[in-house]
Image (cartoon, rainbow, N blue to C red):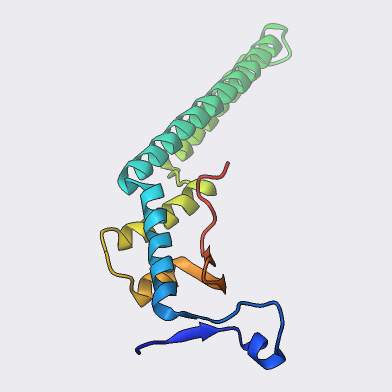
Length: 178
């Protein structure tokens, strides 16, 4: 398709309204879109480095969370054992009951530790979203030509106000927002 241009239909239908005067060529729009996508890719930079940083942070959070859970579990167990021992030493529990309850506590600890080891950690929320966006950009990294697939994958909408103002709405939010 050669010499395809876009114009405001409303302006031509209604006459003299404050809308985008004239027309803009498809080639000009494609150049703006291509430049915007390139700048997004430059902002993202080295995608693999970012993903590694995200994974490292997620792993640190997992360790921090796991250590905190262990600490809390240890405190609870110590309190239960202390209470159990006090009841035994005060004569409120018989020896066989004391050892039976102590064994029950140990079994619960073992089951909790087993469950904890079987749990697979998966990043949720922001990390997952960022990984999805980075994977999308990684798919198109290094491609110099603008393709229909690239535009459909990354761009939600293009608003043309006039030759000097084109707004491109990407399908993803700013991944670096706090």
